[in-house]
Image (tube, rainbow, N blue to C red; front, side, top):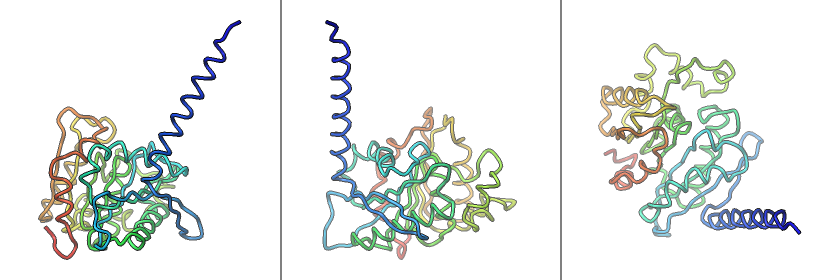
Length: 273
């Protein structure tokens, strides 16, 4: 008798339960939450640091994932975050809020930005967050979202960490996307000097940007132009780390960058560094 089909079934069962075990392992660390915005229900996750004083207000990071983690399962965006922070999570003292961008849309649309900011505000209220120490970080699509949401909501965040993201895309904006985008951001993108317009809106918000010089998805020149525009506009704390010979997938390196978490901890709206 050929036992091959039974062996294959056994392998699939083992893999299935291993995947379930992996998900159940992280679920206890990433709390599931939902919020209603404009009559629609949106889910998000919240990660809490191990080292924090329960009686003290804590900083809160809004993290925007890349395009490959879009959807509405409220799971994929966690994978995009935990792989990067697991090696360094013992050093993190901030709460992380993880919304999930819907398919075929983007972070700086009115719908997604309203949802992400509402999730952030809800987490600040629930977990004793410090509204003076809000961070905005994102990778790839989320890197674009970091620059654009920060420019559309000046004075909201104490620090920005855009990773492998840009401001202006390589192609003209699709008319449907143009209708969906935050109006103030659309006006900046349409301006004769978009980088200067974004730099003016971002103002003195502290920035530490990361990019690989061999990025095949988002040209490194996009980051260089934005960082230069901020410096030319007089931003007193704009930092830029460029990884030689690295491509697009640099999120792990960025979160492991020496000094990043100490720098974040130093940022506060009322005490710009």
